[in-house]
Every structure is written in structure tokens, then in C-alpha cells.
Image (tube, rainbow, N blue to C red; front, side, top):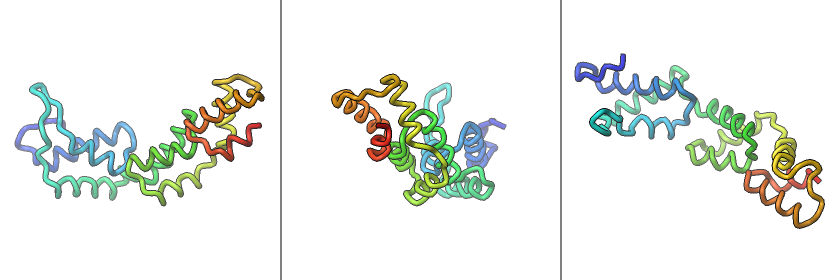
Amino acid sequence: MTDTSPRRSAYSRLLDRAMRILGMRDHSEQEFRRKLTAPVMTKTGPEPVDATEDDINNVVNWCYENRYLDDARFARQFIASRSRKGYGPARIRQELTQKGIDRETAEEAMRESDIDWIEIAREQAQRKYGDPLPAVFAEKVKVQRFLLYRGFLMEDIKELW
């Protein structure tokens, strides 16, 4: 199946590569296109992909039709994954934008997720600064700065005290 002999069409090789890429995890369309068109590493070094733009578009369309590629599903899974790692909604939105997810899809996925951002912020703050959280102003500012960096909103951070 991974035979790269000239007998197989460029479309067939591209489809095979697409299945290997999407078999690992979900990708956004932008991420998927970037990986699909990236040079292939061989024993002799990187080799450019010999597929045309039409072949790439056909593979992407085929992946959408067969539900291998879905930006909304990717956004939901990405939000769940990043929130489990302790990141807040602002940072997750920014990362989704960088991955090519449009604002409407990202916002819809954020609304669908039933994540308690305040609880995640509290867990992150307690993990780093201990329980109870600092009450001295200078220490509170450090906690706030840390949580803002992690992508939490100031209104959620204020709920901690």
C-alpha cells in the first residue's frame, strides 16, 4: 500500500498519505493541507510532492465527504485537549485561529463545551502557588499574571478570591 513506484498515480499516493496523516489524529483543513504538500522524507533526502493543486483539492474534498476531515470536530477535540492541559479560553481561541479554524466555528465549539473555566483556573493556580491561594496583593498579582498567560479571562480569575 505504501509502494511509491511510478505505476501508482499521484492522486493515489496522495490519498494514501492523507490516510496516514489523518490516522494519527484530527487536523484542521489548513494543517492538513500543509502536511499533505510538505516534502516527503526519503533515504536520499526530502522529495517534493508531485501532485497537482487539483489532486490536493480532490483529496481534501474526498476527506470531507467521507468525514475524515471536519473542522468543527477538530475544534471540539482541541478545546477539550487544551483545557485538560490547563489552558484558558483566550489562549485556546488564539491557537485555533493559528490552526486555521474560523471564528464562528471556534465560538460554536466553545459554547458547546461544558468546561468550568473557573475551576480549571483554580486548579492551575493551586498547582503552582499552593492552597490556599495567596492573599497578599503582590502575590495575587503573580497568580493573576500566570493565569492570564495561560489564557484565562480576568473575570474568571477574579472569581478565585
